Image (cartoon, rainbow over the protein chains, first blue to last red):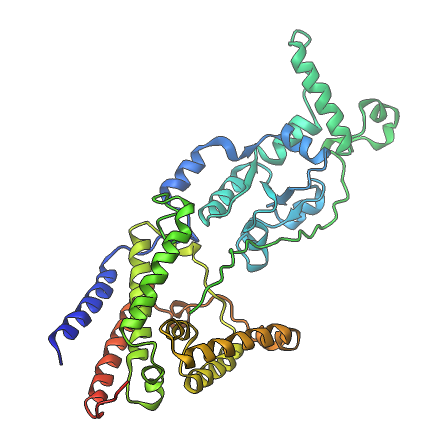
Length: 218
Length: 196
């Protein structure tokens, strides 16, 4: 056999063998730790109750609400049109499609924002985008939108405007107007939980990201 | 064009120029290595010339190694690459038809253009047949569509099928290739001289 063939074969084997000693390929199903840390430190993934209420009221079609609490809590009260995905089942095969998409802005929430923050971190580390966390969770939503605190008489006018806006929003979410509560004394305590809204189980049609098709051949 | 344009080392206007240069180089090398002769090409079927096997194997190995190095050095994002889905049934049927055409016609689509380029009549006839096949296939596509799209396995690669890492797949494939080259060399020793 000619020497040059042996030489060429050794080059091929050597370069293929060299691959074994290089670092592994970066896994696209996971975000690099530095980037995850950077993303987590940016407050951009928090959405405040006011912004969320505005989006819900205006019927933003790109919004996908995900309730991370258990089904019992979800049945008691949740935001309108929210999906219930308990955080233990976050990465189930049936649920992952809701997060691995670029059609919706997914807003995660639980009672506080601890669980939703952890879930956000978990999902973002899997390189999913368009994920948001409701700041202070449902409790925050309750205390700002459904049950806003009346500003003190000396507060600036801005606070009163915000208060009346929140009060009006709360009406949308099923909290009876203050006068209505006083008149119908029989239904006391309804507004405390913001009323029980009928929430239909919504099925989001998720269109998976498609890779661009390229044509090629011999 | 590969890692150059997405990384902005070249502007997209160069796409066609680069394609032309690569095309010239491809045609030149095919002609220089005798691939415009149908006797050389069908040798792999009759067992007297294994140049086709070696060329395809080498091309696959070089591309595999090259892509992995490029992605490891950060020039290509491996997961952005489009992987042609595998239609197992269609691939087998199509492979048989292609192989039959190859052994009867003596060319593959690329080499037939090469042969026509140096003025071979069989190359021209082959191109005519190729175009006829394209037209017929397109016209009868509605009837063939279910076969065409049968048994879609998705964009599977050897990595998933074998359960190995990319690196080991490439290394094993290279080793298999070199063994195949060696075996064909051994066979080649027992073959009398062929005139192309």
